[in-house]
Length: 319
Image (cartoon, rainbow, N blue to C red; front, side, top):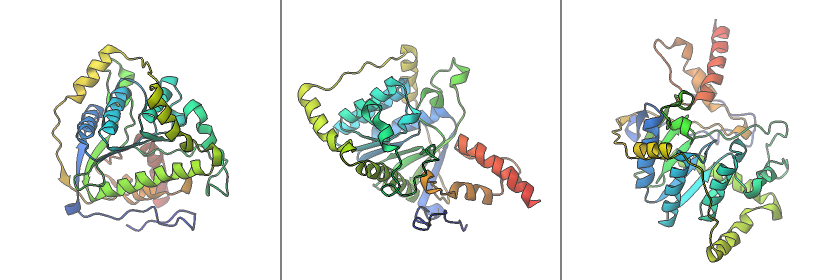
């Protein structure tokens, strides 16, 4: 499949990953949010080297609090634990406090700033941050990546449409509005290393944006802040939680899950929003979804809606 580069000559095709043969990648499908939560927790608890998590939404509800506790445990064990979020998409004070709590325990959380200062990194400075369009500050990072021990030969990852919040993991069975239907897949093999590359360059992008702020680069001050907090005592946050939902989270976390891994020819696509890449859209349209006889599954709800509309448009043009 030949794909076109984006409109930026200095970016070109450098964001495109190769195709991996079936003998290099294995994939298992997660049927719903219940399975996705159980799989993620089992992977996270088994981590022995690193944890990389990126999500547009990471909420400090019962499922988010449970995950945060494990992240702090893994950091205390000496693992490299890093998180990317979109703080503007997570405005609640409880969630912002959860990010601060992770930071004070030594976990790097990019996309977030203490005291709601993330706006500092959104101010476009064209010469310092190339390709930022001041008229399109809504170009957010929508990736959902859950990568465990990605740099090892036993690395495993989850990709798909699920953010981190109760409604995605169907934590509350009594709430119809809180039982969303979305799709994740678990991956092993060569494609996991591509996801590591995608995560790391996203992470580095946020770090470089901060560096462009000079003395307003908050990373300059976190090392000293953590040292002070270690000496004086870390801030103890209270997080509201429903005991019924906490029990449900623990039940799902302990759920036995058998994954049916199958060899698959695979390619990881990433659209870096501010580089105007369209690889996912191109690949989707090349599949000619209007020719599907049964169904075509795209494990990312928002992108599926947008691309389906374009597919219908392309079908009309094809006629």
